[in-house]
Image (cartoon, rainbow, N blue to C red; front, side, top):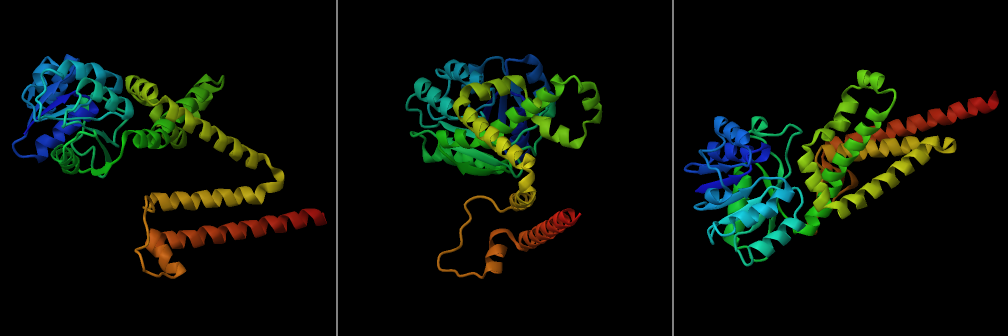
Length: 339
């Protein structure tokens, strides 16, 4: 199998490393506008061969991977449209999908090999020097087939995702863009806002010295490649704006509860409930899990089925702590009234 990777940055080079390590007989051709990125990818052995034009890279390719920032995909499709084989499978790694699918329909009408993709993996570091063969291990790999896509083309991209250690997940483009705006694009925007707020403060010299794990973790995505961040924002702006609005409402509600001196017990309940919800998410209670039809379960058994005994124990622990805390708060209030 001959694979052309157009864009040998973090994602493209990681795909090349993974395929060359795990697929017998694969031959990877790399192309990038940056000679430095190409040279680095070749030194890392992410590609077998480098070429100096996109058209040359795809001419004999069985699979074409567009691993470039989203806004670079349209001109790249224009560049390869007359060189790509009619039976070649074409995929991408972009973080938004609706615009990419529209461009593909316009530039490659009726092509049966268009199967867009989005590996839900990455790092704040970018470039081929940061590439890892194992980057996609355990990640979701969203697959968005064009209407005309053949079952063979879908199978090829699905198998590539599995080979690289990812779990394929088929979606349509609009569904994908709405969801990733919430769980990927909004966190990036929130990180940028939090970092910018701190950086703009007159107290930044002191804040930066005190900042530790919490601030670093929360602002990590502020270090996203600006080209990538810009392209994500410009091609998914309505969905991102929607989730920013919801985030602002959530922050305002949190603030309201925080300053409500009459509702301190309810604020503690909110903290406890959020802690439990996060534990369930962290330990695997995610995604469309349903009880088998006809199977009855006790309350404890259903808890075990949905999230495991650990979650049940965590629930009991948090609820007991919450009740103890509320009883303590009530007792303190009664003591104050006596005084």
